[in-house]
Length: 209
Length: 209
Image (cartoon, rainbow over the protein chains, first blue to last red):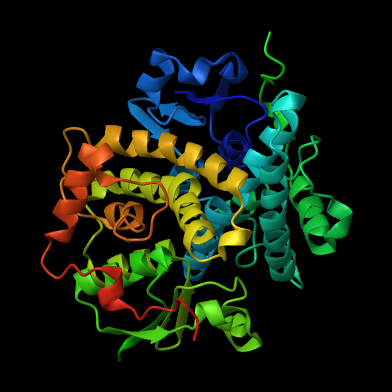
């Protein structure tokens, strides 16, 4: 049975799930959510996910939300993207760091700077969040010094979590050339056979029609 | 061997780890980090954790960072706080939600409102983050409607993650009486034998001496 991923192109969190599904070879298809037209706030979507967010994965009778949960399910189903058993705490560490300190802020900052009307963009908030992100880029770039992958010796869900917002073209204050270790790591990930850009896997929802 | 948790009282993230260690019955002791005096930014502490953050757990040769990783280690060591096997994705879902949408923002907002000098508190940022938190309280309170615990039928690391900043006395815009399901759930957690308030488990670091 084909698993269905409720998603839209602009969501880096959906991309984490979509990329894990794709690179693991699972049978899946995207279901477009018209996010910017408010579809994630409708009672129908709230019944699917009370958090009002993508991604949501439906696989048979199973419904999963939160990108990291969907990634873990992909790992459990396919045995891929897990890394070595002895690296499992390290994988989880970076998935949590990404959720806590990184894509929670990159995603929101990109939203504020690109998907809000120009006169509604909160300048003080954007500057504050960019300051927090600079500290996060330093942590990420420092960790990748001398390393090929975030955890252990292979591509894992830690890489797919941390990279998620960094391939998008919309500006939010991140420039690959400022961070050479991140830059090289993004090139390594996008060279993995089967890798796709988020806009080549999932339909865009912005601007709303 | 007694595990050592590098922590300080004001850190809700350290509290997540400390409470898991305590309620699971593991042999542990706190090691105070003089955070507000800058100890987490010293080269010595950065060598322990390049992220410059507490908590850090040292158990024999093992070093773990990120509260959710330490919680998972406690679960793996003791078999406690895991919930039923069929609830494991649900437990992970709420740990990730907490990291992504909740304690990442509660912790920072409380920091800005209480631990920065009054003339350095960014009003627009605080108001923005309180708006995001209101949406998160609605998700949490709604989820707890008719439920005793966040995931399944027992106390798990999902509860210990999501509750972490909600017992502190410093104001950040959260009032228990506005959210009756959250209020009752916090009472259930604090009634668990062995529960302790963060300031009764870990030494405070504010104000710096």
